[in-house]
Length: 365
Image (cartoon, rainbow, N blue to C red; front, top):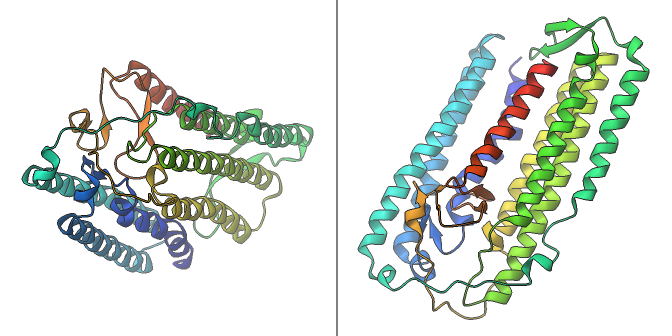
């Protein structure tokens, strides 16, 4: 059935492709393709052309991949459609990484040829009252998520006898069951365990947003602090909303285990919920920008250059600075935050997150 995977691509991967194309237009004005620049350089004709070239090249590549994918889906067997989608997603990731790396190298070469960047590094601004501002929502909001999870788990236990003896775990595009397992507490309560893991993950993300390193503009510190506070608050609220959507989706999956709802309804709900998250993230990225750069505009020009810390950014997106006590910092490519990989805690957090998701998947599977 061609239209089901086609709808999924349109609803999920087209917004993601748009975000990848727009990436250099959403970054801070002191960063270009993962390389620190002055604002004058960022708005120079040369870098404007580079951003346009990036958009045209990446947009063309993603469009061609999409068309090839849709054509392949149209002619693929039911069993081959999953393979087509896997190949498509893999190629999008590889092409995105390759294009970003090529423009990162071009940007390093361009920076070395421009005299503006040879000025001394700029000042660093710090707002000592920044943490006292409303920069994130409280983690207490996630009590709502926990309540939904507990209600779902309690109902599953109360009506455990009404679950079928064989529970469907995997479906094909036609809604037909391709894998099922025998009923047990582990399988029935599996979605609740995954809910617990996801709630903990989103609470951690919310905490990370609050604790991440300040990055204020020295020429416009008050405006920069305001923009960054709004940036963090919006993404904090987004993490809470996204977490609730995922929790509700897992509760719906658990409900489907019990009642075996129509396949069209299951497909629509399980596609709609992730689509809402992806589209909302896209809108938020365009309206906010990295660090809040699209929120308000400074009244005057900038006299200071960006702090030149390129040596700590490997390939423009991996931050490794043993002298920086900060664990979380803003990304240079894309929207959001990354970790300081020079801190051992970063590796522990990374490994613990993967392990928790893996263990939950194994238990629920």
